[in-house]
Image (cartoon, rainbow, N blue to C red; front, side):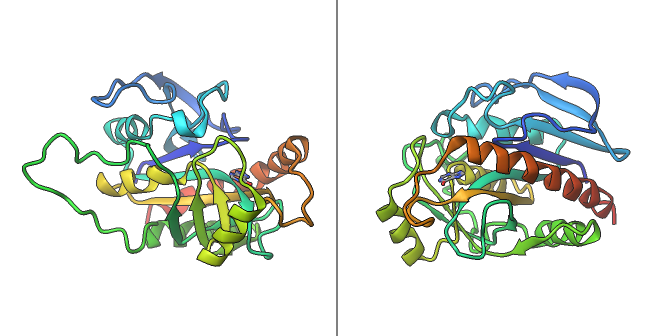
Length: 248
Ligand code: HPA
């Protein structure tokens, strides 16, 4: 398997990646967030893409998700691991924790969320009952166990439109809906990977308590950055341990 890693906030480059080359892929859907980086991590070939661009300049609602997923497949990726910062809604998802969500609720709007738009001769309703690939999730969780990094197994990812953070009432509604975490980029990324039949899983990094969860304290971006810095060190370990597990 050739793993593609989509890096989110806090992971715009991959430490330890031996870079072979960068490739700009042009797709029928426009330009991806930046050039793809082809390289080796622990002697295995991987492809890396920074979701928000290498200078972190593209906000969640402006990301060309279709171009990103299309480009990764065109470049030879056979599975996609998405790294994503999230806000914790479930009280077990405290800042700094890693989490492997297993469900999604999509609250985004106005994003190009399908490849099946041009060819209307056959309408395709892609299966999405289990939006993340079970096998890839399991390997990621096993990788986390291998390297002694604690990763919460399961939870529902609520995808919001951004770029603003949520109100406390919105988070309370999401909690009642069954969301355990909130992020701005999980959709349509996950469904687009499914449409192209690319196994897809998310490694969530809890950056902060979601709005209203911490006794109503405002979310501080400095605190978020500090938490992500440590969290990404754990993510790198998990990635390193996951890669050998993709070969069997
Ligand atoms: N809300 C939405 N997206 C996020 C958050 C949040 O609190 N934290 C990190 N990504």
